[in-house]
Image (cartoon, rainbow, N blue to C red; front, side, top):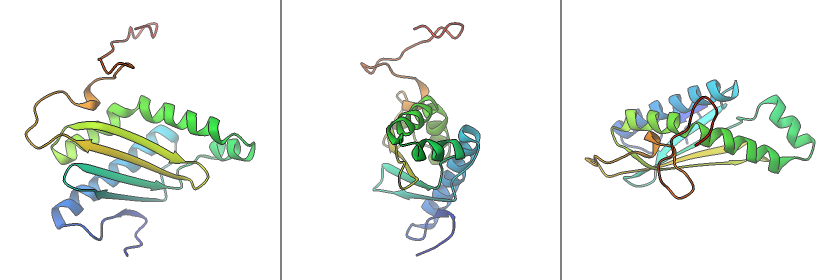
Length: 154
């Protein structure tokens, strides 16, 4: 196993390795911009032809670790998920740009006790020309929602 701290791609074909390494690097940059620090280890793997899974280790900030110490893992998980999904467009744009394919679904998760996060991207088939998951923010019923940027209302 490759123990490189960022972008372990040891079991993938060369083209997939280049894309996976680039996705890992983009995820690190997004995490740094969003949380003020990046993970210490990031791995990106393909799970079949249409699924990209990124694992990121040691992403919690000092303040987030304090929430754990205070016995607030659920609150920490909820806050992290709020930020992750608020930035879904940023995550999806990076994967779409690097793979040349549109994202069908973006699923984000974190185990706050293990300090391990995952970002999963289910891609549309090559050649798909419809809307992307990253291009619109969806309401509860899956329809696009426009927001009035001045007051946050829909």
